[in-house]
Image (cartoon, rainbow, N blue to C red; front, top):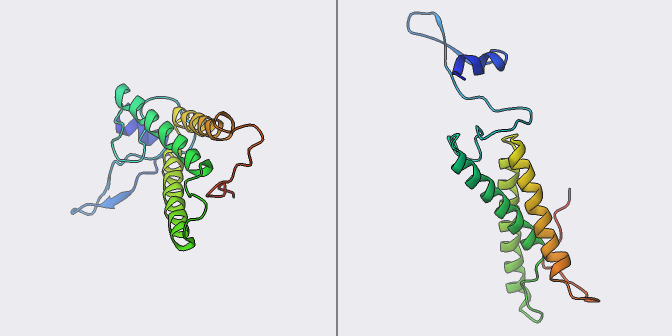
Length: 153
């Protein structure tokens, strides 16, 4: 698909700029998808990445999956030992919170590519991370305390 076909499919929304001779010229820029689509021709987080290459697309999916799992691990794992100085514990909680929110925003930005594969691996990553933390590692009748409250809307 050449750029003219792509722009035609976007309703001709490309910006126009006057040229030096006064006529209007079309500047071709890649437009974001605004609906879900399937395929490796996605732009995820960085310009020209994964670049339409199958191997790089799979790598991008793996990265989104791992980050989504890590967000859940940060949300449901106890890192601070009881009896730790309150100021130090507060600083550690703050750093963990910033890390968790930053990674969650990266997953959200990856989802804004509107690629169906990215959406599915993000869901699977969150599901696996939640399962590992709340089911697989939890001992029966254990009162599980969390350092960080779950992210809520």
